[in-house]
Image (tube, rainbow, N blue to C red):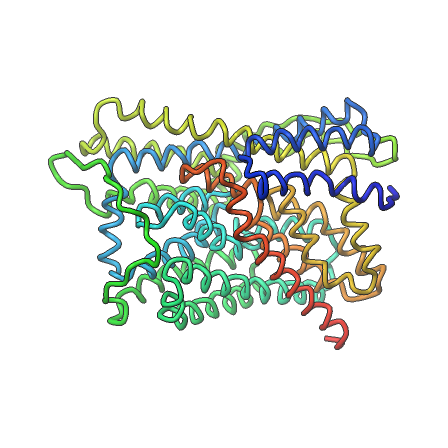
Length: 531
């Protein structure tokens, strides 16, 4: 499909409209998503020559893809409401004092290390929807909690979820040459290590201000170096398990660090949430910290047992549901693939299944122990549904918009236009292509599938080593997860501030773009120096 400046600007228009509505008009995600979806459909029909049948199929793909996200949101909110109804958050807040009275280190443990650990085994927004409410229970303000969890999960977006996004990248490109394969891993893990280190320092700042960075800089740097270098080494041996192994060890290390004398002094948060009155436990015995974490402990156990055991995973994963879609072509000649089984959904190994079962176990335990009172289940379900419905509308609108743009060729035109306009300077902008893919699809995996082969083609066209560009693709996608509207929606929904997505994006978009530009500059310099 050829392109010109008119088509490039038309392809860019829905993204600009989304940013304007969220950032400047302060619209909620659900309102903005539906309007921009309609806008993208009109452009697809009148500018890109998409027929009504083709557009309808693209929207249907978006709705189907959204289902896997919604199936995570609803049970995650149930876990939150179960914990809130039982009074577990007040117990968690008090229990974290036993770990360390330094509240900034508490936030680092949950919002950076535990958040990254969850990304290592589950992904799909689970770290955000699980950890953001936990941070609020520890005294962090809702907006800050969302920002922290978005930062904490970013570095695990390539090799987390048991290397799913990495597998998506290598499935689209030729890395059969061992040298190219290992160079791509080294470039990728090195840049992700920088992302993780910066995230740790920013989280310390968000939690404790300047003093938070000053007091915790050594801890963050040492842990960041351990995670970064450790992931490089293990990724060369086993990309699937590298992030999970390093995140698991880091989880143990942070709790050992909390027992050091240095962290036995009370330190308050820089800008804490005003203390809220939580429901008190009225059972025969007061809830302890182990009971308060029951749903989250079971969540980890279930995810680890199922996802790391290939026999169990394959057995449960055999029950799948999918839709079939015929291939279509636009009037401009852009053709979509035919899918006999599009985006199969395996509900028993979906992250939502682990969340739902963990929530059920937590609820039954709390009822048995007397921590959830009469009509507790009714309140839990009512509150969970009330938060899920507007979030689901927004997710469907955003994902459907991305599918319309993808199927009509708009996303490809954007990438091709950038490559054609920049020529030999393209490596500087290469991470931004990965970021664009994740911003549009809410998934680093989808971004790698969408643009992985494109990055390879540009490398061949420019006659340069493709390893740095492939790494730029997935690292840009990881950074893009910080500003992905769909993922931000998960966070704002989980903390009860739906409609403030623009406020969140405005806080992180500048930094995300700057970081990608910095990576691009390093890659460009490496080509100039012949590295």
